[in-house]
Image (cartoon, rainbow, N blue to C red; front, side, top):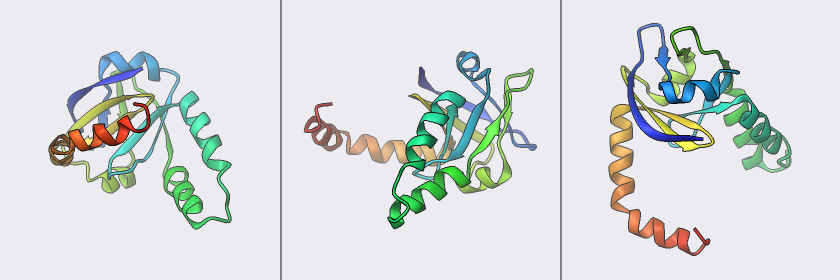
Length: 143
């Protein structure tokens, strides 16, 4: 399970060190793709296969289903962790998420999210302001 928030730097070649506590979970490889909220999602290959299978079953007759499948699946790329615990984040995904030098790696149970540090601060501040309303809405869902 992925939990926690970590600050890391991405180098000029686009390599990002994965937090040490997550490396064992990703040693068999991972998949990175466009996320929502202008961040990147990183999944284990097992979790990715499960998610991709569910996305592939969405009705192609629905525009939103096609758009979401294109967003998630066409942007996906396999990742390999090198001997120093780094992954190479493809340039097109770095551009999508606006990743500059400082990166936040956020663990969210079954995935990691990669955020530009400044974008993460803005998003987190906005979300924390509305946390009471969010909790109330989710309470209606049994969370």
